[in-house]
Structures are given as C-alpha cells and as structure tokens.
Image (cartoon, rainbow, N blue to C red; front, side, top):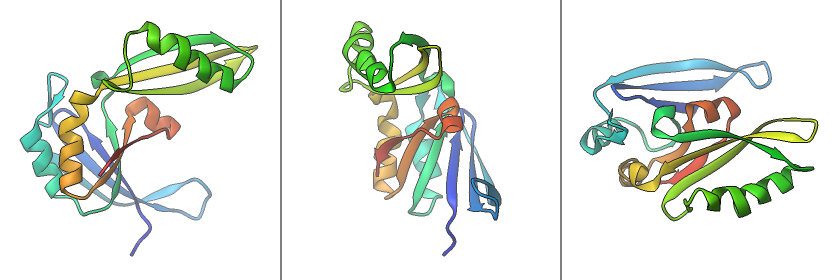
Length: 165
C-alpha cells in the first residue's frame, strides 16, 4: 500500500481529493491522484448532511486532512506582548478566550502563533461552533474515516484538529 497523504478540500459547491506521495526532496510531495466531487456541500455556512454523507461514502476508510473554507470559521488576529510562547498560550486560555464568552464545550477553538517580533506575538484565533461540525463528524464516524480538520489558513501552517472517526 502506498504511503499517501490524503487532502480533502470541502468547498460550498464541490470537493477535491488529492492524494500526495512523498517525493525525493525533503518536505515535498508529488500528486498521486486527484478527484473532483461536484455537488452542494455547504449552504449558508452549514453542511448539507445528506450531501456530505454521499461524499464520505465515496471515500475509502482512511485518514484524511480535511480543509474547510475560512468563511465558516470566525478568525481574528491578536497581538500578545509576552516573553514566551507558553505565556502567550496561558494569556489566550485565561484571559482572551473567556472574554469572548465562548468555551470548548460549544466551540472548536484553535490558536496559531503566526509570528513574533520584539516581544509581540501575532496570534490567529479560529473558532467554529461544534454544532456546525456535527454533521461532518457523524458521517466520518459512520464511515470509519479519520478527519483532521484545517481552515484554509491553518492548512498552510499544518495545524489540525482531530474530529475523531
């Protein structure tokens, strides 16, 4: 069996599945296969469950890196004047996130440190309501598919959230 990395891009009106093979160069890949699936999958920021189910039935049991459009997430950039990344993460957890009146119970919350310059960290905070992700999670579990979730921006940084499956 080939050691492919499977990327599933889910967009409002279609999805792409790209299977990548590691190439001879470090940290680079070659496209092994590419498929397009047509159909409305997201409407008004929510998954269309029957269409997501139909898409997932076409996939093999495996692990997929699922990239979703940024518009279904709430994203913001925060400046944090802290000495270390650990202090930044504590600041976000103890002060910023509670001040937004969201919690891990109702939202999937991810933070990404984008850069640091002279003691100021730029941090992306991305959230999505768990109720929005529920149809994708249910179908993935039914089909025994493991989904690692990315926003389009987070995919660039290779930061993921395990949806289970």
